[in-house]
Length: 239
Image 1 (cartoon, rainbow, N blue to C red):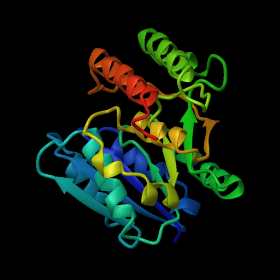
Image 2: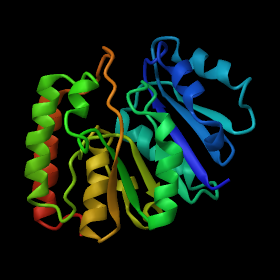
Image 3: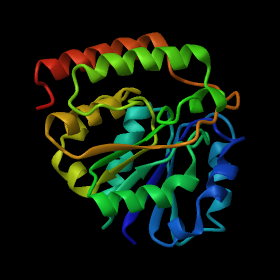
Image 4: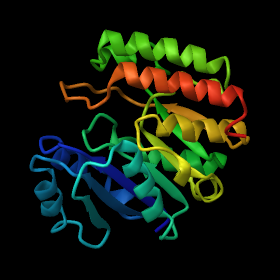
């Protein structure tokens, strides 16, 4: 097995079973899959436990007793991944917003092009985000922040705020990710490290899916954090 996939899950009892069942068999054949329950208050934990009966050999579960925040879950995922021999580490959100069906193609791209950070983009295909139901305020906010970020980052991406990300082992072994905070902006900080230190960053198109899931992201707070990362990038913090 050469791949580790971790799934951040917080109050996703209605989406989790479908998401897990959609992971392609060819991915199960090469991957460890670990669901990280972030202190969910609904039936997420039981739904996750039910799935162990089907995939006991390749599927594991870690559960925080209290909600720790997205960034803490990401760091826990990295920590667990690096205890295995995985060459590729992918994050797949438990709410089903990102397509697990894309994992085989993403892993092939990582291998073929020696990519260190591969991000799924909802905006490569024009109009894709709108067709997938992304709210207008999110499309406008993301477009503004991405255009601003592209002025300060060497890598020019169409979507810097997608959580569908795959990393090379080399990147996670060399970058000080354990020093990062516990908030939603951890993904962008990882990309900032990769950009500043000349790791290979690319993006590939993914389908957008919004079906009324409740978001735990405060857009105003997140926007301010993005501006802070841009400032830190400009000052050389990630170099």
